[in-house]
Image 1: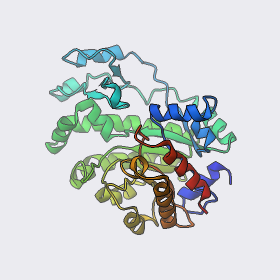
Image 2 (image 1 turned 60 degrees about the vertical axis):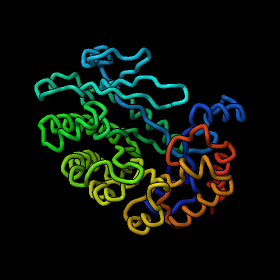
Image 3 (image 1 turned 180 degrees about the horizontal axis):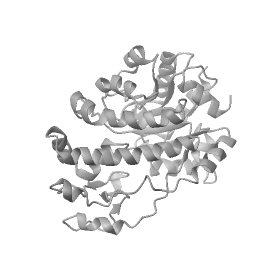
Image 4 (image 1 turned 120 degrees about the horizontal axis):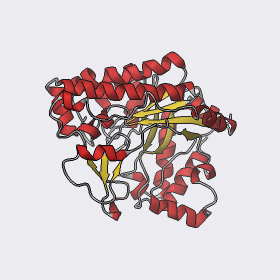
Length: 354
């Protein structure tokens, strides 16, 4: 099997030849990587990651100045405004990838005003480049993956504000329906384009869990988010029933798993061991979905020994069994606290597992 065939067979629980490795390095660890291996080869190429990303659609309108009037205050110098109009103000150097999120519709008082907001036109974006990117990835024997994280819920609350959107949903304010439908329309357009281009894996995701509890009630999720997410997956299944739909949510999401399965996911990521028990989840759901993650970035990776890392990798792969169903990998970005020896131990453990 080439890496593409291997990861797809693993995710479909049809067996696999090699336990693949994947991870993301923070800038500090990337510097350590380059100090050891040089700058000529990206670490994903060096360590044989099985997937490569395909770029998203090209929007015709990229002027973010149009969003500034929606903020009734001055944004900090260095603030980045994304295509949705969400502003992220810079934090300290120690904060690394964390920024302060500002919500442009936080102070929106009615539906008429919300309808004036300049949402990005993803249904009208240019996706013509994607097929060539997919074909180039496939030519290398790798799987093509689409980045669709912040699929509905996260994008919506980034724009509206979490407290405000929660209240809109609880009070059945028409603004919640309008905003969520607008974002779902964009999610469908993006997902369909990636699928038509031939992507193997669609990486969906919205953080709906916290460290010890779910972020919202099951009822709120089922009433507002689940049917819209299911619509996105249904649209891509009509094009390619075999596409792998991966769903990412940090934290404790156990009560939501049956709903995610009903919506159509194939893989759950990242299964944080600090929040959920992989053995338990695999016993309950391992016959119907696969998993990605399970190697704690709050525990084992930063604070364990290389032997601890190897042990956890082996234990989790043994739990999954010969059919596969687990891409064992760190559950999030590897931060500066992670010893480089633990990164090497993870890579070696995946390579050694038989």
